[in-house]
Image (cartoon, rainbow, N blue to C red):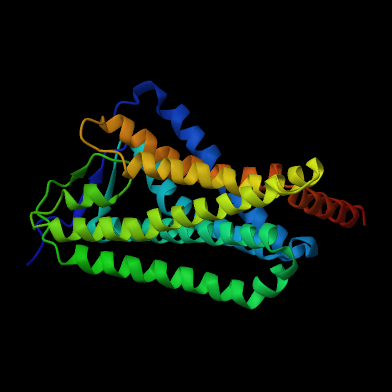
Amino acid sequence: MTNNITSIFLLGFPDLQNFTFLFFSLLVFIFCGTISGNLLIMVLYLVSKTLQSPMYFFITQLSFCDLLLTTDIVPVLLHTVLYGGSTISLIGCIIQFSCFVTSECSECLLLSVMSYDRYVAICNPLCYHSIMSHALCVRLVCIIWLIGFLVILIYIISICNLYFCGPQVIDHIYCDFEPILQLSCSDTSIIHTQGLILGFLFVIIPFIVIVTSYVYIVITILKIPSSTGRHKAFYTCSSHLTVVSIFFGTLIIVYMFPTRGKSLTLSKVLSLMYTVVTPLLNPIIYTLRNKDCTEAYRKIQQILTRVNKY
């Protein structure tokens, strides 16, 4: 059956009025900061020998997820804010949603694997290098990305089997799951159930794994006799724990709380925090709160300074 609509109009924030340029400038600043920060983490990992560990390998993959999410959402959002809306094809809308889901599913799995890495490092340090070998880390990352692509393949097949009859307007800042389904005249009960199952598999289960890992980590840390040792152990987990709190906190607020009675403006602001602000915070947390990253950055600065002198 041929769809009645081929293009979709994203409303974004139509009530900005006199704040359009200010908001646009803020988004450009955040976009540049997000791209620069996540690329910096990836470059630091590649050039610094001190960062060649499983944890930093996973952090680079997390940065790649944030880059994928940012480049998928923000350019369209900038156009939407600047011109008071943005027209996107139905296929383009589905592609945007596909990239969004792939990055978020992969990030959920990555954060759970990173929590297991911290568990092994603190609870079983003598066997850490034998358990978390480079080969295992590469296999885990490959599996995570493969699962992410398989999940979005399921979504794409299900969405493409729907009949879209309108309206052609999405009152949101990007093509999300629920707004896309609202454009369809087909029965979406099966795909809603599918979404709940996949949400349980990729949000609830990873969250349980993370919580369980940190329960064991806290128990182990409390058994450390010296306060210095306990502080050092907590410090190694602080960056990851902060990222987990921000990521899953915003995820739960946006998708787990009932949407009925929630204003559209509030939904957009929460989505903005989740898709735009969080990818900026991740590299800041890992670089500013991590001595290894800051030290590696200083060494690179020193090398570049010496090169420029010659």
